[in-house]
Length: 221
Length: 95
Image 1 (cartoon, rainbow over the protein chains, first blue to last red):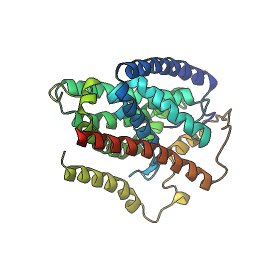
Image 2 (image 1 turned 30 degrees about the vertical axis):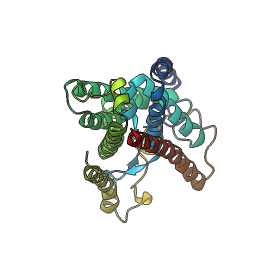
Image 3 (image 1 turned 60 degrees about the vertical axis):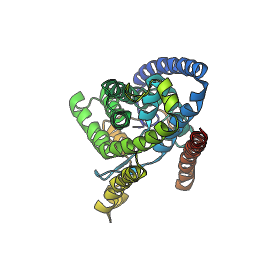
Image 4 (image 1 turned 90 degrees about the horizontal axis):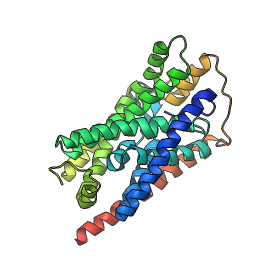
């Protein structure tokens, strides 16, 4: 999902930067509020960020024959919501842009938008919807992580098709979706399973904290 | 969940990522397999005639250094997760 350094026209760089900046700023405000209200959630915040660090460093082979990496953004989104996850994604993306030449500083806004905003927003909506319907949070987190990962790549495809609608927006979108989204399906399933394992242990060790953050289904609380 | 269920989930995960290695065994980057999707997208963009207008301020000078930094990224994440879960596990046992 990394759009490489310099691979986006300047006007699009600015648009994505502005949108991402607003969400990240709101996320920082939310982090301050969460840490003030429940100081014990600090470690959980660190774990959510660390989970993204690990997963986005793993480039995995897919059945389409090319490689891609998961995002790890579903966990943070289910626990803290999309804006906080956007802040965590920014840290990961900065590390990769500066030290690994993966993604870039000019495309940082666009990459935060896909991995930090669209993916986590989808994950959060799915997670909240399923848990509200009293579906076990362990099952809900699978779908949240799966869709958070997949929609991150769908968002990148849309961003690239908008910037490079050649010969037409539709055909460009199809081309980018084939490259990104299709490759991503098995990876997203894998990410869903890994997130379920982490979630199960979290529920076993920190049930009160999860309840306090409102991250459990009503019948589990 | 029972520990055995968790192990099954982990095994399914491993199979999911070993399968492509078996399916495309013998193929390599030279005949178009196991390349990165990010690079594939960059090629499509270049195909439209677009010239990248900015390049990375620093790039890992070799594949070795790149793998060092990727391993470092994974290690930083893993140590934080391991520390927190170890701490929480100990805490929940005391209670």
